[in-house]
Length: 262
Image: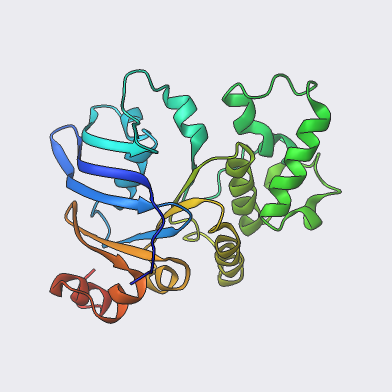
């Protein structure tokens, strides 16, 4: 067990979610500690991706989707009517399974897109020097600056898949979020690009609270501090990662990580 765990950045209590009449999450409750990486594992369809989409209120963008329960960020309910979803998503960034840069935008404008969408920056012509600093810092943070510093006006689609995913991570970091949600961020990448993203997670873990959904249990074991196992929309077990993978407390967790199902 970790000594002196940091205070929770996120508190989830009795969280349930539906798509129409289909219930996909059933009473999820746990804390997500600050400045740590929490991995969510489980078989396809168990509710992993829906769970993180509930944290930044992207679940509600789906027709007939609804949520019940409470999600707190620094003690404040993110579903409070006074909370603007767009501002919440600035504090809680997200990186998706497949790289999704804006293909018609330049590399530079992709990094700044989140700032402009949330109203934190004006037009492309305003705050130019500040924007340059933001772009450089974000690209340095994802180890991409050296590769693209002379190509900032090139379209994002000219980058490799791994570089595009790091660009999407830079876009998320540019708004200086408190929390990073990552939905199988390496699923579409080759082993070399995956290793680079995992290295970046190691560099970022002390500065951000990160929740990563992954189908790759080896990846969860490599990068995370804590791991939660989801099954049929329920949280079966949440523990320090080394405990989950060496001595899980629930037989269902053991069966999953040893490959008996999933």
